[in-house]
Length: 172
Image 1 (cartoon, rainbow, N blue to C red):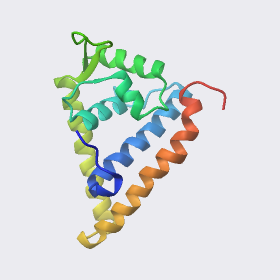
Image 2 (tube, rainbow, N blue to C red):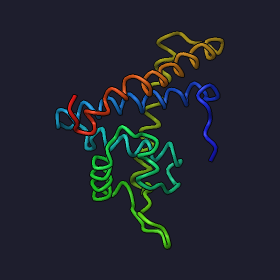
Image 3 (cartoon, rainbow, N blue to C red):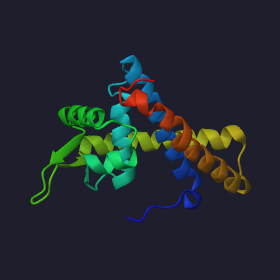
Image 4 (cartoon, rainbow, N blue to C red):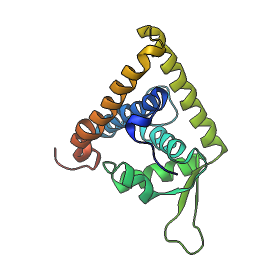
């Protein structure tokens, strides 16, 4: 599936991208503190992986750990493997070893797709709140797309790169 360039994405797609980066940031803080988000059955790392599988594969394409790690390299393979194991145990993802290939593929189960659906609904609510809160109209969309694209780029190039040592349990 060809990937859209950041400037080609819709405002809602950019909002989803920003949401993932914010969640990655929150997950990094959780890693550092070693705590779960209050009142939620899944950790931020787990929700992030479900979101990534949903976004990258539309919830159905099978990805392997290296596919995910290649996109978000700041998450250590160990942390990613542990999260995959936990989500598999909780029934949100399935792991299969394809014939003739090295490594297993990962995909969302029905339970995982339901959880991803919740994420999408929450993103839609957030998007509607932003539109309403800022009094946005269609004429504002190009400007907002530009700012969300800049925010995604900022997270990718500044914030998340600075967090790589924390996520990978290295010295700060």
